[in-house]
Length: 439
Image: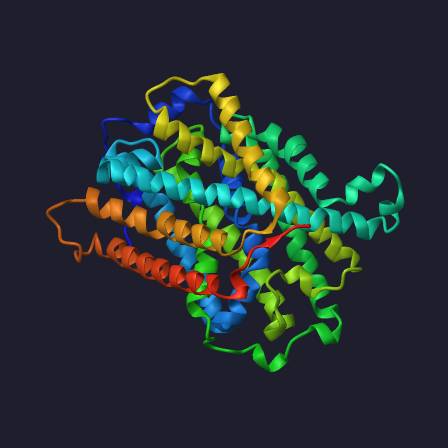
């Protein structure tokens, strides 16, 4: 595959996004950027990592599932750097500008829609997960708390979502520079390590009736390969944050960003493989959608993991809000200077909207599956490859050595998108796709 870092010295563009980043921000160091990108993958995809990856392996088959994890992680590493390379080749300093320079207003509208729906859908899902985890942990830790006047509100799902969103996520979301979230990102990554360690330690000791058939561990190919591809792709998507993280580097260059990307995707791959394989190894055909639900409700260490799961959500939610806000700014106010009142208005409106949906909904159902799966595939595979095919040497055919990887990536993304959309719409016609409204 084409290596963007190898051509760093020869790249020029009308608008140098390195200079713009240097002027606008003092920038963060390499560790800050690695923490933010790794958290963008593990944190923004942590509900997929914890809830979906073990189940995805059970659907795809053990061998096929592990191979898919490794391949899609490698493709993610490449396409994330391809987004930044496309920015330099096109002269744009955002994903929106890249698509506009390549495909005009229609490209600008398409990527804006997909970025916003993916990030906003993630925010809604994070709020739902907070409501599903933190109250459960509080009730387990304090069984009689619900009987105590006033204090009993802390076992209420809606109260916990509101407190976590307004008291933790909202203040973090008010920052302008994404590198200032690196400390929260570091905390979220530590929480992810606790979740992985909990599953590793407690998995072998789970009650035998909760475990699956040991003979199902060595499956090669399962019946749900395409759904598994969609889930794994969703877990690794961080392309909508890539230019924000690149611009937050103190000295943003393609070489330095390549190091950030390599470290971040490697950390994410190790974490995902460790959790997914260990969970599947214990529960095989009984692996549930959320692997933490495979454990008893009174397991202390797993309850700590559940708490960390919720903690990850309200420290990672601001990363997605940054994307939503940036999309609005770039699409509607790209030629205007920063306005504090507008910044406050959009931050408040977006986070309150996502919180409201989280309060009234336990499961966004097939709508979130469609917007998340389709948006993730478009942002991760289709758009970066399509832009490179448009921007690279126009005299070369798509099947040339330099363009073939991008053409293959584009075709792969298109197939996954169509199949994922077809399967999701199929669910919409069954009870499986019905949304569950909280009471």
